[in-house]
Length: 399
Image (tube, rainbow, N blue to C red):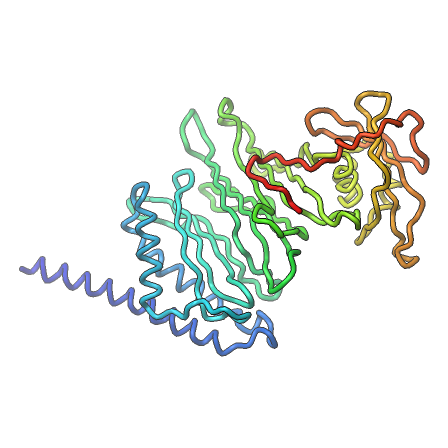
């Protein structure tokens, strides 16, 4: 009898703690509704928004004990979202101020880790956070998280994807894990927003972010950013290979957007960007002009091209790719012509610049030369050279 009474007391205590956490979450969300982000901005809700994120996270962690095998996460997700709904948490509203609301909670497995994604309402959208858990001594322990809690430099995050790669030693899954996240900050209007890609390394000493970059991205279609993180199954101890593809603004003001490629090789804490950096000659020229010289020089066959890079590279680069891309008599060379627009003269066009590009299959490009005159041996129009391409079969046409 004493054991039964004790068990009932423990269940009652756990239920009371759960109810208290949900009540605290409800109260915090309710207080967020009093803010008017349209006039005061995100920062007014900063500390309370973080408190809501952490109350939600902590309550979810108290519900993970039933997740042990594949399929358990689906049932747990349904139960968690139902409990949040029944707890009276403010529902999503169809207006621009979503402060005080919650989005759905998502759970899934990846490389032996349990990934949880949460969403708390802000201006026009929800701000998502991601957490990864590892089962240690029979209990789930949080080993990684991605939150946006710096409200002095605040960009909300919509998490498009979380990919995890687990390193192998002696043919077994052990050692460091690497996490790739893809997403964007949101807003009320426009198809253009900041897209981000981040890579973390996790090991016994904790987590360390290795890549944390963002670009202006075009999000008109569902597949605006995709990526993969892996290595060769024949070399489990080899470097980690990360490929990211997204739609980015183009220097060509007539085209507006282009396919951007980020390919990283990671060994320990060392990150190298490697080919491919583009999928067509024009996109390569675009990338060469807009990237810092520290990167562009790696794709240049001569250091003398730095002078042209200084002339063309700027905070804003705009112009037009003119005419067809030309195939040269030397089989691995192509010519791309670009007409810069002069920001100091009301964006009137300057004389065209001609780029000589070496293209080695499949997508390894190098800048062989630059001139203010066409290259005499490059006279064969190649309209297929700059057709839209993708490294991912799931991609769709971007227009």
